[in-house]
Length: 366
Image 1 (cartoon, rainbow, N blue to C red):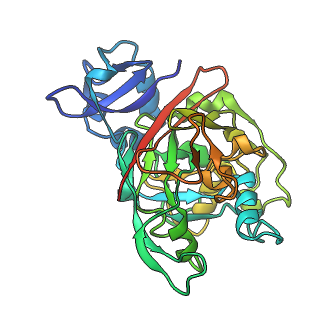
Image 2 (cartoon, rainbow, N blue to C red):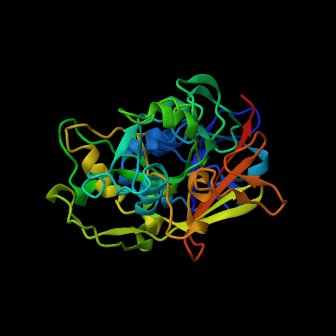
Image 3 (tube, rainbow, N blue to C red):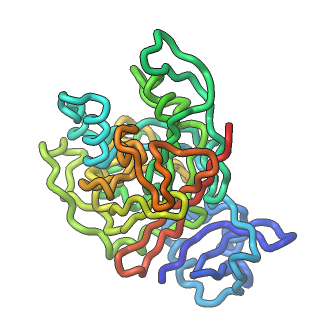
């Protein structure tokens, strides 16, 4: 099983870099000297990520390290987030959302098949798995009302995503070619983009999501190195029309199985294969105007949904915006989250050799 990298602290000791193997944490810095030891002694993965592929390979080559039980250590946010960008790269998700909010019209907006649509989020609201999430408040316009009111969101949702973590930065004003983009990616996390749908519906035109998504985004506490996923790259669906030259590559995706649980019950199973735009294309587009990558940048894939109801990555789609409430095994139904609900997202390659762990969050009242 491939190792995952993160930051932990034993009782009464400062945080440092470690690796997760099953239910054991490897203290990678213990006994490691020199420049590499200094990289591993910090309370963040950022220094290691910035050091580049050579240092990453050195860490992978560490064969022995003291082990601690996962239950005996405190786990922290694995890296300091520099910038956060969330994309919208699953075709089935985009089509579902279009059909829900624009029934009878073309579900995809004209630009969707030409570029990876995205928006900039708030890096400071990224939290580690296990952090409790308070129900956000905001403006929302009740059905039939002439204007908005203000209060706790009544339509709080989740979005099952991957997050790609940038290690090696790029140079300002130098676009990253699509064929070189993966050289900048350190690893992959699971990502839950909590979304207040009623707030979003009122605020998102004309500039897109704002307060509906900026209150919290949860990521898994352990990062899967992107190199471990290289054997699991698979051909993707044809991209039609053919992208412009700066985005052009043979379509591909990662063969990663993803699961969404609500109140301990699996409500969706999907796959990262269902992403239309690759992370390489996302990076090429993000930097095409001269914007550069920084160590610690987090790139969300956007909600990952498949073609069947049981493969949709959000409650918005699973309940069709409340028109078809989701029935749970305990006899209750859900259109959106209720206070006390816990959501768990997990991911792994089909053979189980590479796991992304989980991202967990429980909703509390406003």
